[in-house]
Every structure is written in C-alpha cells, then in structure tokens.
Image (tube, rainbow, N blue to C red):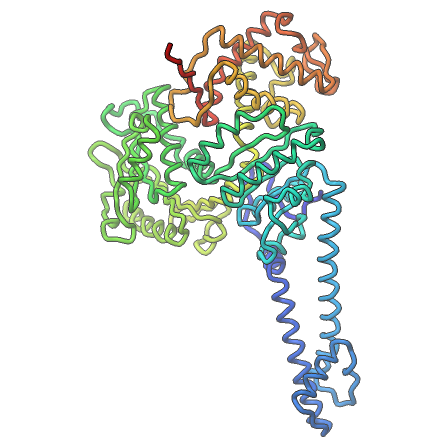
Length: 618
C-alpha cells in the first residue's frame, strides 16, 4: 500500500513536521469541530441577513419566522428574495447549501470507506499489520508502519477516541473489542504478518491467548509463516512470567509470542546513546576502591529502574573483559532507599558492578539545591551524564532547566543533561533541533514514545535478537575460517539477508527453548550477569546440534528444498546441509556444535539465562 505519510530514510532521524503537515494533522483530528463552526457561522449570517432584509423591505418577521427561513435556506427553499439583498444573506444562501452537500458527502464517504476497507481486509489483504489499541503508542506505531508502506488495521474499542479520525486516512479502522475472537477474525489476523497489542497488560495477554486459539483452527494451521504476536507488558512480574513462554513457544501453533516494553527499550537507547561510549583510556589508572565513572539518575520509576539495571549490567560486562574501575550511580527519588534495596535484591551482581548511592529527596524541596549533587566526591568523579526520568514531562523539564542553570555556572565541568518526555514535540517551545538537542541549555530531550514506538524497535523483539545473535556468531566463525562474502553470500549483515533466510533464522531461534528443555534445562529472565560464561558439556553440545539439524532438515524438506553439495541457494532451494546428522561432513558437525556452545552468550545478550536442571535427591 502506498504510504501517505512521509518517512525518514533508514538511519536518519525524522525531522519535525512542516507547517502544512501540522495544519493537515490538526484538521484531520478536529475536522468535525471545524465543520460545526462553519455551520454556526453560516446560520448566523443567514439569520442576520433575513433580519436586515425584512428591515429594508418593510416586511417585519418574528424571530420564529427568521429561524424558519434560515433553516429553509439549507434546502434552497427561502433564498429567492426580492432585492435589496444584504451581503450576509448573499453569502449565506450560497454557503449553507454547499455546507449541507459537503457534510452529507463526507458522512457518506466515511460510512462507505469504512465498509469498503473492512471488506478489503476480510477478502484481499495479506501479510498486513494489526494494531490493537489506539493509545498514543498505537497511533505512533500505526503512523510508522503506514509510512513504511505496510497495510495497517487498527482495532479500537472507543469509537469517540480523538485519534480514530486522524488514523482513518492511512489505516483501516475497526471499532470493537480486541479480545473478541470475532473482531480479531474480521481484522484478518489469520492472514496478518504481525499483531501488536498495546492496551493494558491483562487485556494484551488475553489478545495473545485469543489469537493463539484462532491459529489452532484449520485455517490458522495452513499459514506458511508464523504470526509475530507482540504484546506490551509493563508489570515486571507479568514480564518474567511471559518471557519463559516467549522462548518456549509451542511447536504446533504458528505464532511467535514476543514481548515489548517501552521502559526496557528506552533504557537501552538512553544508555547506548548518551553514556555507553566511556570509559576512556584513563579509566584503568583509577584505583579499585574508587569509581571510574559516575551517572546521576533522577526519578526511579519504571524507566529509571531499567536504566540503572542496564547501566550496571553493561558495566559489569566491561569489568569482566578488561579493567574498568567501578561505576557510581547516584539515584534521587522520594523513595530512593527502598527502591534501590529492591533493585539490589533483584540483581545480586549489581553491587559488584557499581556503587549505588540513593538520595531520598523531593526535587521541589530545598535539599535538591545542594551543589554537591553535581560535583565530584573524594572517591568518584563528577557525573558524566544526568538522566531525568520522571513520567511527568512538565516536572522533568522544570528539573532539567534548574540543573541546566546550575551547570552553566560550572563551565569547567563536562556533564551531559538528558530529560525524558513522552513525545519530543511537547518540548518544541524550548527550541529543540531535529535531534532533540536544546543548545541554549545544553539539554538533550529524549522522547520515550517517539524512540520506542517505531516499527524498527518493535521488530527488534527477543526472537529477532536471538536470530541476529545466531547469525552474527555464524558469520564471525566463518570469517575466522577464511570464508568471504564472494564464496559464501550468507556472510552479510542481518538486514541484507533474503527474507526467507531471515524466517529460517527466526525458526531456529524459536526452537532453542524446546531443545534446551529436552536436555532438562530451562530458560529464565537474566539475573545472573555471568550467564554468558555458562558451558555445556561436549555431549550436550552434540545433542543440541543433532536436534537442530533434525529440525532444519525436516523444515527445509517440507518447504521443497533439496540437497546440493554446492551450498545454500535461496532461488533454487538447495542446501548442502540437507543430510542426516551421521552423513554430514565432520567440519559441518563441528560448526553446529560450535553454534550450540555459543548459545549461552547469545541468550544473555537477549536477556535470558540457562538454568541448570535441579538434581533430585536419591
């Protein structure tokens, strides 16, 4: 479907909307209000015009007569009057019939357009995107997918949602309950490529359950590729419970359950964008008992907690690979002590990676004005980055401007200041540029929804990360063995892989949980930051490799692939791996065992760890 919304090129940050786009967006959201105001203005002109005409011709009318004549003017039954004709009546007798015709045409167009779009969805649309919930998250995702040229169906329960009319020019809108199987069926979920649910947690889980039941039907089982079902979960307990199901998907259901959390993704983006570049080469000279780097996190809500965990985990990995000193994380919150204690219990390695320094205070109180918060201490440097993570955007910007003024009085100190808002356009009054940077205050604005509710981030789900990790591991080993892209066309970045091969990689990632379960292991959310060091025995590596080869062989043969010693050819559907395990060359078996050995590291990067089987007492 051709896009009607401008989109940035890959890797390019989208700039702010033009004046024309802003006006068009406002009109699409408030068009009926504008039409109503035009009607009120036209009726007023008609009433005044008839009143003045009666005075000019000496034919007095009562107010009820004037109202009657005004209403008749809509159907052009009262506009044929004797001159002189006041200009108000002259304008109204043309404007009112035009408005009547335009309003009727617009209403009919909306009615028939919705019916026509729903008919197309039920009959012809394939591999489209279904979005459940037209909150701000759903609206941004619908815009992003439509801009990428995807066909989009939006399911919204509230027909009076102000975003419904704004969404209609670009997407098919279906008013109904996303947890109703019949509504999901009408949205074409059995033929869709991607289902995204961004309602509240409990209903998102119910959407996934109802979709899974639909896919168990005969028509659902005929799908060639699995449906990517992405649900947004905020509650940490529900996230941990669902993560196990995410990578232990049932083999007989053509659906991949994927989790999405704006706070986890936002924390990764914040850390990677503004702080992941240090430490510099001077860090190794820092004494072990001192902190090599320092960040300040203000507001320990969901985003702040995820940011602390992401920073500490990343720093722990650096310390394991090379001397990096310790990281100091100062936390300011009204419940800083209790929240930091909860984080330390949840992540036991956190204390090994960083010095967590909670400061319980209100940013609106006098204690927050202490200059020492932004200065170096005896055993730690001045903060390199100050993150303001309040969910209240106004409070966040107010706090950011306060700190910005204080930092301007410390010109020798190089501290980055980052403030979270939900949408960057809310901060346009501060003069932010296209990258969200406010030069006057040396302030970086980070739009949480702008940066996380995009097709690119949504499609970077856990299974995709696992598949990418498997591909990166494969490419690295092949290149170490002397292979080149010329000899092996598969040695390309993930984004350049043919779509069918990406689907095969996803299927391999989808089977990891089942293979591990066969060995008695299970997957759990990552809490042990040394999980990447887990090692299988040689026998276990071979068992995992055998199971993956059996799955690979059966899947490719079912799809019509055949054996050819020449290698992988997507167009001809041939592969040199289409042999039983015992008939594979020794070098290929060794490669598959090496894949199995790399699994712990790949899983750790995606946020999972392998839990050893519990030995039963004899």
